[in-house]
Length: 357
Image 1 (cartoon, rainbow, N blue to C red):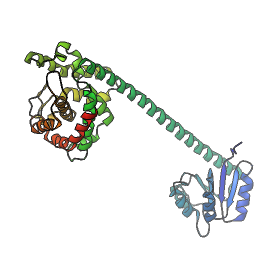
Image 2 (image 1 turned 180 degrees about the vertical axis):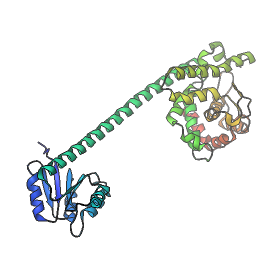
Image 3 (image 1 turned 45 degrees about the vertical axis):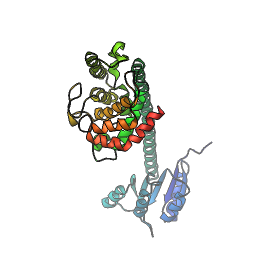
Image 4 (image 1 turned 60 degrees about the vertical axis):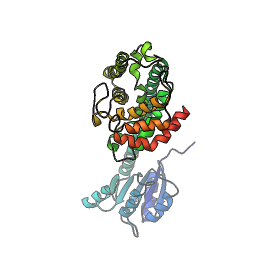
């Protein structure tokens, strides 16, 4: 059975004090005497005690010097130290506490008093360890619960996004591709001087997951329009445009009826702003320039690129080169010019993502 007795080191340059201390404590604790601070550090390398009784006045290295060295060492800094000294002035006692001692006992001391002080200190240290263990375990449980909630949120978002894509039969793989495009844009954007402060405030996991809901409002669009094999008429296009406001309303309703909705903040911005245009000619609000949320400006490039390079029932797919040309021409009118420059630097990665999906 493992020895449960606490281990105490007594450090004193007077042999009689070592013997007296050992005899007083040995029935309760495992006691190890050390005649100098140098010897103390030798035995500390072999084993860490539960407590150290440290004499202040010793030759070569006194107790104050020894505790300074201990507190500077991560291995030893948490060992509780009680100073034993013949000094009885307030200044010396305060210095001992300032250096990190947990108690300061003046010689000559009462044996029962020393035992009680040691017992109290060891109890406090045990309670501190128990509290830390509890806090660590609680943090682990919180992390596990947070992971469960995040997993559930992601599963819900993915399921809703799958339902949208299942209904819109012309855009297979669109959601997965646009997520990948967005990640490439954001990763590259983090290397620029523009927008980095805003990006640092984002939870990137929430942002990329939320991107799946950019077309969630299409659930409310009739199949006759959503899957029409020909180009939409002006009247039908106006109906199609309502998928944005439907998406905004649906997301806001969820946010208003729940308390844990931080993960939907980006979804609201993306769904509501990815059809806005830099020059104000987009919809639904006709926002201009940086009034368009950054999430929407990023998704606009990812969404348009994918629409261009994928074949639809009413059009053939454009080449990667032609799609890039169209996006570059749209800088300052359709798209944020800064983000177009970022797109140009990762355009090859967009092409690779398209090939993979």
